[in-house]
Amino acid sequence: MSIENMNRRSALSIGVAGAVASTLGSVGIGNAAEPDGFTLPKVDVASDRVTRTVAGLRPYRAQGFRLAKEQLGEKTIIHNYGHGGCGVTLSWGTSAMAVDLALATPHRRAVVLGCGAVGLASARLLQDHGFDVSVVARDLPPNTTSNVAAAMFGVTEIVGEAYRGDPIVADLQQAVRFSRRYFQNFVGPRYGVHWLDFYLIGDQPQTQPWDFAITPELYPLTDYAPGEHPFPTTYASSFPTMMIETNIYLQKMLNDFLAYGGALQVRALGDVSELMGLDAPLIVNCTGLGSHDLFGDTSVVPLKGQLSVLLPQQEITYAYLDGARDLYMFPRSDAIILGGSHQADTWSIEPDPDAAARILQGHQEIAAGMS
Image 1 (spheres, rainbow, N blue to C red):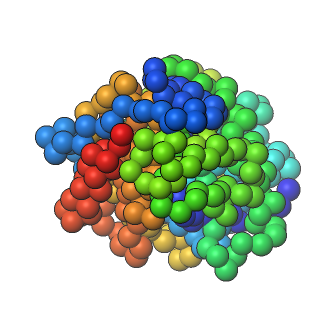
Image 2: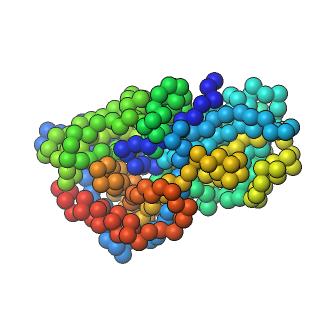
Image 3: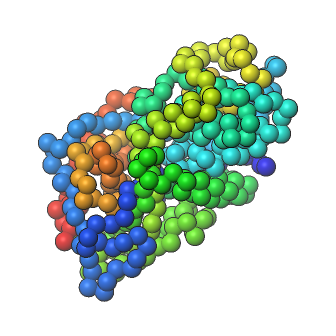
């Protein structure tokens, strides 16, 4: 098992996962369009349908996510953080790799730091492998960074261009393939995981970005020529993927962790020396951006993303991304999620009114131009 990193970036500004198939008259999951085109219901992007605007900080490392084991006094630390724009997507894959590192130690009592998607996946997999597990976290769902994620299954903002070589590629391939298989265990309303069709739209032919192309079988594109799709762009392509509704999924994962005997402690850790007082010899660090201060890793930096949340429309069962305009739409049972934005080197989670206006106007133009 390699202990290298993996991380992010993409021409896609996603977050990850999807809703159920397409509505009557739309293309079904994985099906090609009819030669004379097809229609899709339009999102109602009226300003009075916006329920809130939220922003979150992605934990970005140009080198890729950090997966490593180190000794800190009497404690064995396994790091699993720095997933950029795809923490939910990669959560099961990198956590499985972290558990492999844990199994190679003599310890079977562990503390997981963090209660987002990566922390909860690590905790559950450790439990499934016979570990006695506690979670220590400052924030619980629905107040974690993962809760702000758009959370469509796809790899984005994961590795800087200068670091896109082996062994990062091999590790990323392993993690994303494992995660995709594992997330299929949770498909259905109970966990808030659903399949949907995801459309890439633009005035140039749409192709798989680097992050997708390294596992091309996971994103099989169906291409649509001009006139074969309803979007106000020259070209479109689609592939089937999953939507993870974090408002449902994260709370269910926390409930599962507790049901399997997990212990929970809500507290902030101000200094790495406080780890010595934790009641376990093994610590799995899933603090994401918190590792910047807690472990002094200045390579993990914030990448701010912003979403506008609309009232739900049950007829919207597809997603789209206009990569050139950095605009994406994901449907959930409780909302329509509109993004996006990517602002580097800021620690503020206050929404930017200018970004909110740009996002809303851009999606209004897409909806108005759909046939």
